[in-house]
Length: 51
Image 1 (cartoon, rainbow, N blue to C red):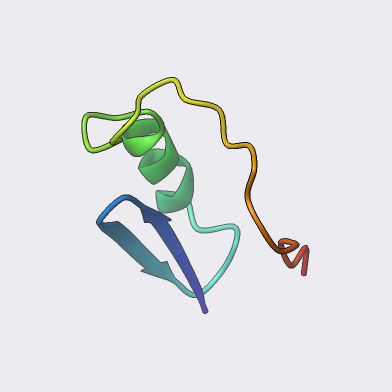
Image 2 (image 1 turned 120 degrees about the horizontal axis):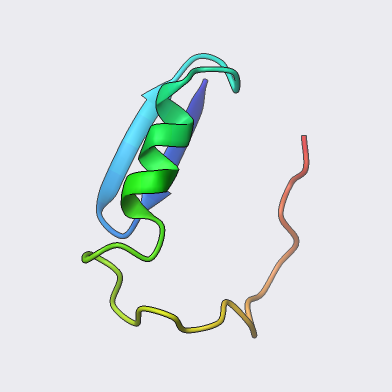
């Protein structure tokens, strides 16, 4: 299972090939729900899991 998130929005899917993921990203990437549109994602902590 995969959960895609974007500042208060979530999409749960069973496969990385689910077409709804691309639609979700297109709709919410730098969308109106973003608290700081255009801000860089730097200075984070931890390492993303690439699996």
